[in-house]
Length: 306
Image (tube, rainbow, N blue to C red):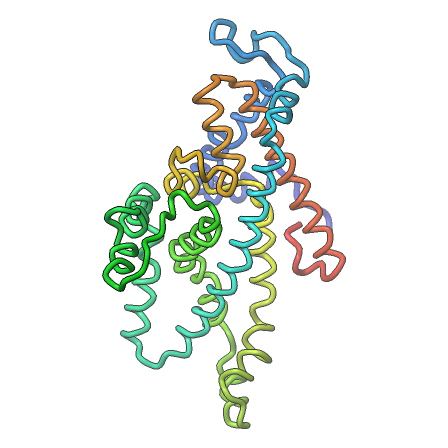
């Protein structure tokens, strides 16, 4: 069949094009036009000459980032934290989505889902204050409970070893309720007749979940994981900065690329180095998503993103 010319196709579907115009303009302004700013990564930027008038620096900005001694550390932290987020959050989202569908009380299900979704709308500034109120050494709820129980209080803000677990816990608490919506929609879209037939044949909830629900969720799981892998070298700045603030004792365990670049920009005012780190981060994300999508495509092309 002969393909319709692009211009004729746009004119024919002009109402749909017009409806999508706000989204196109949004991404053009905030996603595509800023790409030109990547040139700062290769320049010795100064305010007088501007972005395009500043002298070229070659790869000096990248060299400065790597010889800082923190490049490998923050890259490893970013990668490992995101791996943990992908594994823990997706498992919890799947478990809670299936559990909510199995709940018989309609109002109880709605109230539970609403309560789980609520933390997603709390700002990271507020979350940081809540965490501080729970775990600070002098007046924190946790240490207050330990003191009244006869135990020694824990100085969590000066003990880096606790923070990987704490950050993963806070991320799950805030994100699982929202991420669960995708799996909840997929589970509720299942053919109930198949599940009912399995139940009549004597399959309990665990066997139905393992043999029916989880295979049905595989396409959703793969797509969501692929999308998450695309940002595997991007840290959630609000999470890492608002929880840790400027506590240098914790940097080795909690610093990611985003917070490292932010602090470097505040202290050294090296815009070129910050842009180089951002370029390096984007390149890693691009390579990772291409590689992950290629492997998924080799396994089953129907599950790939492109």
